[in-house]
Length: 336
Ligand SMILES: NC(=O)c1ccc[n+]([C@@H]2O[C@H](COP(=O)([O-])OP(=O)(O)OC[C@H]3O[C@@H](n4cnc5c(N)ncnc54)[C@H](O)[C@@H]3O)[C@@H](O)[C@H]2O)c1
Ligand SMILES: [Zn+2]
Image 1: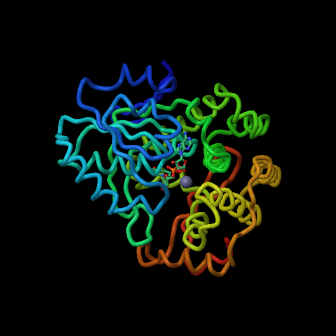
Image 2 (image 1 turned 135 degrees about the vertical axis):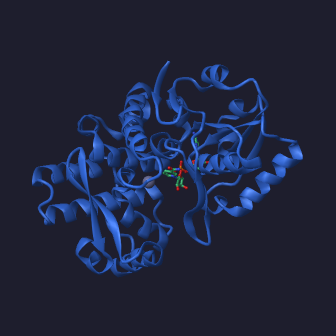
């Protein structure tokens, strides 16, 4: 069995979900939290268990959904010995992880991750939570699942746009910490990754290794974990300003623009920057800013109340390494 240790006993396991569940699920009552798409495409995964379905999209990642879930769990008689299994993408696992770590002060939980973004990012690392008042992930906990199962074959039913969104996080991971993964992506293609499960599993495995090593050093994001935010300052501003782009698509725009800045500042060699630009294009991302630059700057500055007069920006310095730089809000215009 192929597995990667993350932290605090949490592991990501790669392989067929049904077989892994037989080995990993405790001999206890299991309650699944999942969404309608998973019920439609992978009903067999849910069918053996009691399950609760939640809505889709960021608006479902809310206190209202939590309230609904807690009430359902109470109605079902779930107690502290129950085990919660989140099956889905990042939205479902973020919600399931939060419900599990707060219901009756916390019950054990695990995930089957079913999106590329979830596999390489959201399901790993122990962060969970929901959005409040239009602010992303404002309420949540750090708490590690007992296991994460990554079954690449489940990703076959993902819509193309969702698959590409996940690839933005893959490219991000390669830039910040895995030059070999970057080369592998250069030699590969969108279609190859979509059709070859073992290639996809190799790519996901490499991403999980990078994330696991960063998280092991800094579980609560006091320092090093911030490097995972490469491309995300601009991405979050884009997401706040428009719903035209998904998170992954916005991350690709963020990666492109932060690399342009690094190049202008001579923090990255021309050749490395050119490779980053080419890879983003190779995987079919649009790098145009979807809204006016000044609106994006305003959106970034909107966070000022919460983060003081400056913010950390992660800047690529070569293929496989980044620098964490503190930038004053007033100097942001130079960057974006
Ligand atoms: N906790 C973390 O560390 C962390 C890190 C990154 C992102 N996130 C969060 O993850 C969320 C985004 O996750 P996502 O991109 O996985 O989105 P998602 O969970 O909304 O999934 C995308 C869509 O694909 C559908 N879907 C999922 N798996 C499918 C499958 N196998 N076949 C067909 N359809 C499927 C879902 O129903 C949904 O409609 C965001 O809310 C973000 O904040 C969390
Ligand atoms: Zn992201």
